[in-house]
Image 1 (spheres, rainbow, N blue to C red):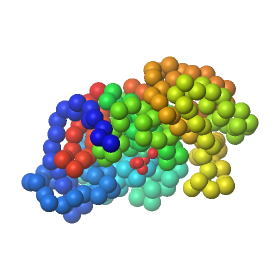
Image 2 (image 1 turned 90 degrees about the vertical axis):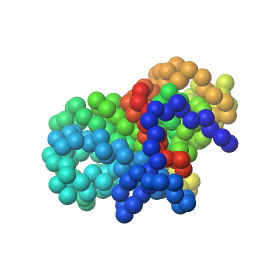
Image 3 (image 1 turned 180 degrees about the vertical axis):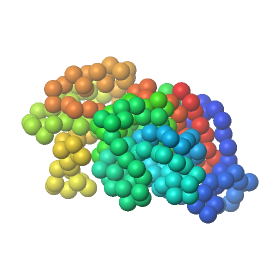
Image 4 (image 1 turned 90 degrees about the horizontal axis):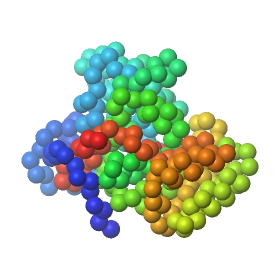
Amino acid sequence: MAIPCPPFIGSEKLSIESGAMSPSSPSPLILTQDELKKIAAYKAVEFVQSGMVLGLGTGSTAKHAVDRIADLLHQGKLKNIIGIPTSTKTHQQAVSLGIPLSDLNSHPVVDLAIDGADEVDSNLNLVKGRGGSLLREKMIESACKKFIVIVDESKLVAHVGASGAMPVEVVPFCWKFTQDRLQNLFDYAGCVAKLRTDNGGEKIFVTDNGNYIVDLFFKKDIGDLKVASDAILRLAGVVEHGMFLDMATTVIVAGELGITIKDK
Ligand SMILES: O=C[C@H](O)[C@H](O)[C@H](O)COP(=O)(O)O
């Protein structure tokens, strides 16, 4: 299915050379999805400056950004960076790479966060959390002066929920009750709510915060996102949801034709 791209501003053709990004002439090489993620991530890291407090995102795209930040730190090209990880996995990665870390208690204002997304719509609204992280991401990314989202072009969607699940983090207590209420809330959009398990098996998936995730699958557009967000958050038992509305300040998309950047 062809997905309409947002009206991006700024566009450059890029390729990966020796693990770094550089301008390129048209290349016969077909880039893999992971290479596209890396290109978007490296581009975002160009916005990092010495002395910044950085939100370190979670997932296969953000991982490249964290690696790159560590490389630049070790090369002495970046200095005095403080990272605030958005998940235990990213925390472990950052520790293993020697990135100095802190948290929102000590650093309540974050200069820049770089993170991936599962969906990006034409207004830069996002779906996040299909990898299991969303609450810490939302706390840290809502404390940011600048939030750069990095994606490959497969993440662009016509509307939120078009490509798969919209995750909702819920407390374990009577999760089925909350799941049913969530499904009823979006009955008009043909919603099916499913408790997430580890790799689709029997074991219930547990978030970094000790909660469960209910994935909402919609057959139709859910309409006004702010209305949907407020309705979800009003349900007792819901901790947070994976719609990140009006939060991204910049989206960097890497695709077969190059890299495109849209600022809010
Ligand atoms: O739960 C995971 C996070 O929200 C990720 O940032 C999101 O799922 C995108 O991950 P990836 O870059 O691996 O597609």
